[in-house]
Amino acid sequence: MSDFSIDSAGDDSYSTDEYETESTDTYSADDSTSYSEDTYSDDVYTATADTDMDGDGVLESVSYDNDGDGFNETVESDTDDNGWVDTVYTDADADGYSETLLVDTDNDTFLDTYATDTDLDGYVDTLESDTDGDMVIDTVATDTDGDGTFETVESV
Image (cartoon, rainbow, N blue to C red; front, side, top):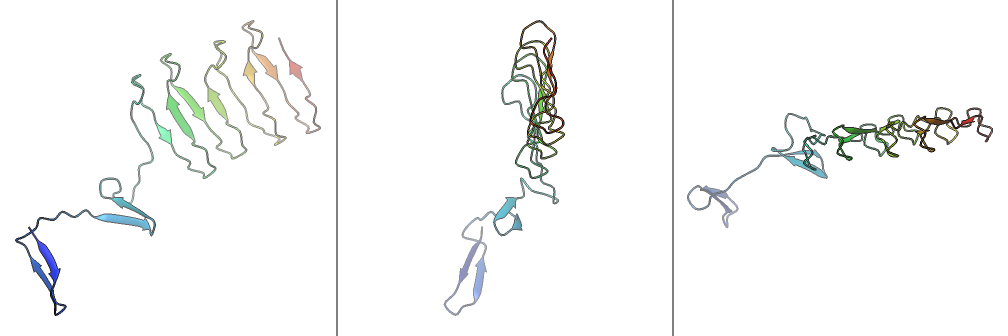
């Protein structure tokens, strides 16, 4: 129980018999951000969330944007309920393309893989898919010399 007041003479007076108060220590990273003791301690801020939000038995983890490019680096979940964790590694080299997408979006039993734009011509270098359903991966090579024309188009 405590009571804090300022008397008319301007002196501080403090009494411990009228009100019960509770205080929470806060830490400020800058003038606009503060963290309570429960979420911020020992100068370590945890940037992952380990929860099973969809009830599939697989923890969803989010790795935040460590390189400041606006894309989360890793997102883990089992979106198709096949028992395998789908993983998306996003733009770690800041070229505007996701490096690897380990999911089977066309249900051809092959994991789709997107390679980066290594020559920076605006086209992804390799795209895996089985567009004709023959269980053989179709491959498209893009404009590696930057002349605006695809060099090789292979469809098996």
